[in-house]
Image (cartoon, rainbow, N blue to C red; front, side, top):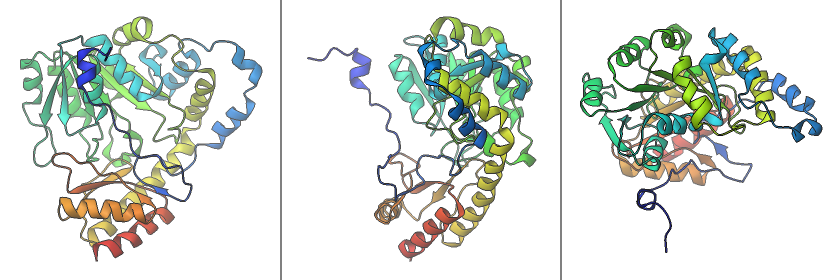
Length: 357
């Protein structure tokens, strides 16, 4: 006998990227930063005493809120710490959309969005991207006509890696009747010459919620620490009503503060990833595997067809290299490849040369 709610029983759960236990595998499938976190993070971890863990942490992670606020030049009331960016997504759906309400997404996108929407028993409204992977010009009209309470957009986009301009997102927020969540999980890898910055827009748009995470840019995927940036009035119900009490622990709060304080160290890894991203894109193109222009730490590579994409995926796996294959519409002939270290990328290219030849 099943005791699940009907919508839970009928849904499929989120499928994460493969996490191998072998240390010899080159892992280019889950978009982790290939470089370690700052030494300041390691020093903060070393300073933590077991005695400090007998007490509850700051329920609002106030020290981190103040640290992140200084970095983003906003108030601490504009910062909402969460247990990874995924908790912020769950909070946004729980707070702003109820059973039967419409949640809009661009498709394809982050595959957790539909799962969280189904958990809340909301109605998912997927809006297909155009053939060039851009948003349709009537995107906001589609959302408003359906009465969408919430829209989730990842920018830079996953899985394509392409970037919407801040101005385009501001125009969407200005016209949309619900809450716009812009998932900036990969924003640290955007080329500086793009001059992309959405943070200041929260002052004029109280329906704009920006998601940030320390998982990618700060090399702390194992820490599970993220945060939202938004108007005080937008964050307040999530902070004081729907958020779990003590949702971030003492250790993660200390390390998250150290990571933000050491942002210059993180920036060095961002630049290394950008440099390797450009090299890898060029080398893949020469192998007959062209890629979309990426502003993330991954590349979406075009294979000749769906069969070859699966064959290359399995061939790389047999050689000890994991990449991501999505068996879904519009992605079946593509592979998503995380940008690794120069040595890892070279191993990848060598294996690919054998497979495509």
